[in-house]
Image 1 (cartoon, rainbow, N blue to C red):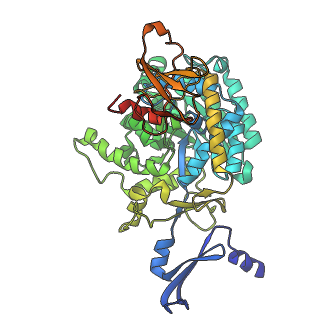
Image 2: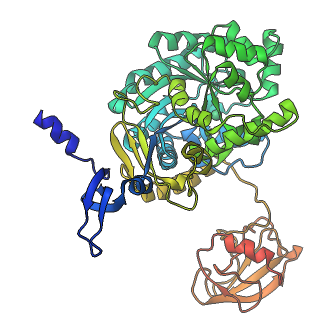
Image 3: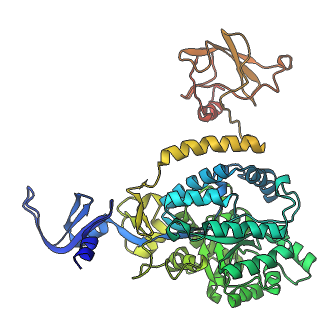
Length: 555
Ligand SMILES: [Zn+2]
């Protein structure tokens, strides 16, 4: 009994203890006494004293940990490699080469970086959408302290696949996932679960689909699959399988629509298919940013009205860029209110109200990842997954409607601390399970190496210039550096990167200089410098000032 009491009184590091509704005699310089007062204590320090009501609202709001039901942790190092390109370029020229060149260590680093962003946005549990090297992901999840359903990216057919991905049979795909299940399921204090993956129907033979269905049932785990993402997908399914609509209809036909299926996106579905999703208990992960950017407007309102369990996901960094479920909550409400224009001819501000969105990001998320017996709500007996929000900032104040404030006003920056499985993993906006800065530096280098290995080159847009690697020509004393998209060259005194070096001469480039293949970029000082003789040249430019330069009026 005494031990139990001791446990209750013993605070976890970083936790906040609030004594409230008490007479607080402060003995401060003004001799204040609060009749209905409160004291808030963090670790060993009083952090607030005042009227109960003020302190409780000032110190924090505690809400349930948020659940992101569709995230590609392996793609985090590919953020920005496929912005503003069509879907086929996105897939064939950027994402597949990127993913197929990943090592297990790359997946580990990528998942760490992604996890940092997830935790900052209040996520305590996520569903991996299917990526490379599940063992690397598992290592990262174990360290991060977060909860996850991890899934391998699985395909056994399809056009344009990278060489290393072809020739995988359905049997091999199933076996490798069974091995992962054996190795990692229920590891990390029960925070990791292993699911089966199906990348999408155009990359799956019938054999793979049905074997996945059976294997998941046998191991009593879930299946995560991209479903009905684009009209072309439905068209292919109709042509190949002779069904009257698309993927959902076909998955029903082969009995893959079951309550352990988490269907990501599910944009191009008709009313009958919404009925099939409901009947079979399939969960849908709605990813608003990805929907708006590439896929289209899913009938989310219709699904929710019918009673389908819909949760929220961010998708991967190369499709969304922001891995914040907080942003997705906001977007989910807006996109679906706006979508009514297509359905009814006018927007409908009552569609997907804040309380529905909060359900999607919490309890529906928990149902989607088949974990709702243990997480998804703050209830006695459930796991302690929660977040502490500091609403006392310009972004959330004043609060007149606390639920709408969480959905429409809260930003990632308002999330102060995160607890997963009863353990603080972020305290005062600092992740305590790893060194964030170190991960960021390593991730940056790893990502550069990976892109080089994969041969991915991102075409420059606008006149972005960056530091030269091989663009320096000329003698030791004189250096010429060239703007890649400019018809000029610059002669620099001293060494590039050396303090005091300056532009000696601006030369207009002509064909006789034969520099086309050598020209990479232009030197520039960190300050906004016009290209003119006498301008200083400093080292370590990043290209940002080069953009400024391109816009400079003298240029
Ligand atoms: Zn996805």
